[in-house]
Length: 333
Image (tube, rainbow, N blue to C red; front, side, top):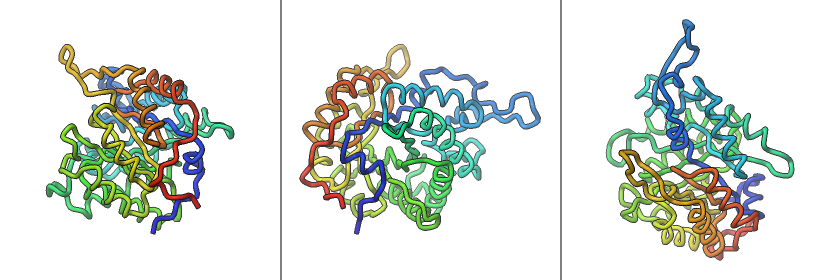
């Protein structure tokens, strides 16, 4: 049976709605990085390049990542994602980085941790979320075996914990079997290390109204609430907040855990051959106000295309208020 974790962040969720930024990849894309940014140790016999691998920036150009993190902490966010979304064996194999998953996740946590610590105070602690994405192979479709996926996620979770991450965030979940593999790996790591941090499990609901493999939000919630290691349940990515409303309503009305919501900055539109997000800061703030005031979510977040201005607008509109009590939520111990 699930017992609420005794952790400062979860205590804060009972006192204040928190704001969390997760658009690391889309923000990096807006910087128009070149191949030079992905070269580590240039001009030495250790020179190494992995062009197009965002997680490699933790080695080759961590100052770019620090710049991104500072932007969102300065906007008033309580938490920011690490650059570790694709930092698993499966994705790293595409860059010749397999076998270095633990090392690079440890470094990812350390890089964001430096920035987090520069903003955090006893009166206003900040957090770093260790993002763990779905990878590129779905077990339900036979792309990868369960055991291989669990090993990959084990290495990622170990590295993030060793680097000092505050929260493990299994996000953009498209296949519940993939999600369960990640959570099984995390549970194993907690048992192995004796260390426990809060865990977010956040699914992606497509414009079709279901996850990629057909599970709706009711099915996802039932599956995730049965897993004791999950502390916070959410929805992120795929759509803007407008398309999420009914899914958020169901989650907030039925989840017995705190609720995390991280929409994209609207549905992308192609402008001059490039994908552009058109949601305004005012629209982002208005929808999150609905999610907070009417539905009672606990973490107002954002995913692809969201900007510091959007978080500033949401924080100004919503404020540092306590979350609305939800009848479905478990009482705290």
